[in-house]
Length: 159
Image (cartoon, rainbow, N blue to C red; front, side, top):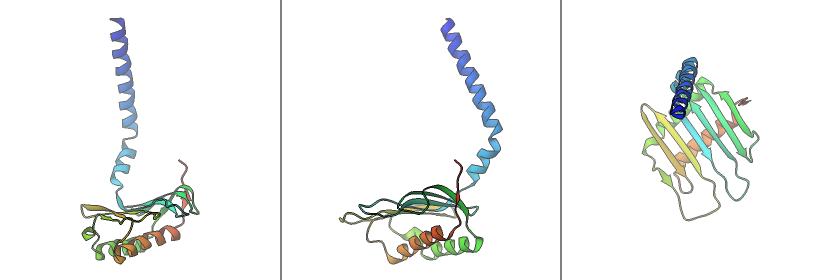
């Protein structure tokens, strides 16, 4: 009987403690949930020295970059996308009719990196896998995001 009381009190103590912590961080939680990914791109490995990284661009024009291999910046970084550049990128995705692309482009070939490109706009979102055979207009979007990655002034995250 003592064990049941002890376990119940322990659970109650920790659940109250967690609730209190949630209240103190409620503003932070709300801020994070209102920050939505609009564009993201992930580049995977190949058998050679292909750049391996991921970038996420949020609706508040902040960007997060994680460099893994064969890139200048290894680790996690953040930056702010200039408003004009952000708007041009959005327009490129819209005018390319991103939501009409196939979900996957692949073929029976090996040793290529895969690019995952994601776009979310006006309640719609789509993630596309490009291994081989994607249309030139999709490749152009990938290059635009890669160019942005190279042009931004990244600051090392302290996480």
